Structures are given as structure tokens and as C-alpha cells.
Length: 52
Image (cartoon, rainbow, N blue to C red):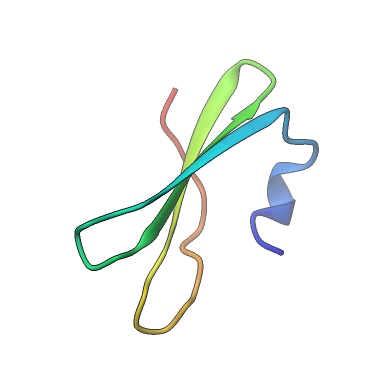
């Protein structure tokens, strides 16, 4: 699990980037969007950042 600090997440979308093959997620929580990424070398999720 990751980004549990966001609470209830309404919708997510995920892509695998061609830049280092990272996983990238955008999650909608209410009326806000958050971006998260997981590195392909350590498989660690970076903290969510508000984008809107």
C-alpha cells in the first residue's frame, strides 16, 4: 500500500513511464489531484504531491 495519508481516494490512473520505467499515479481525492511516483531502482513510492 502507498499514499494511505490521503484517506479515501475516489479515482486513480497509473502509467509506466518510458523515463526510467517508473510507475506514475494521479489520484483524485475529493476536488484535489495528487501525483505519486515509484522509482524502478528501489521500488520506493515518493510522497504524494498536490497538483491541483
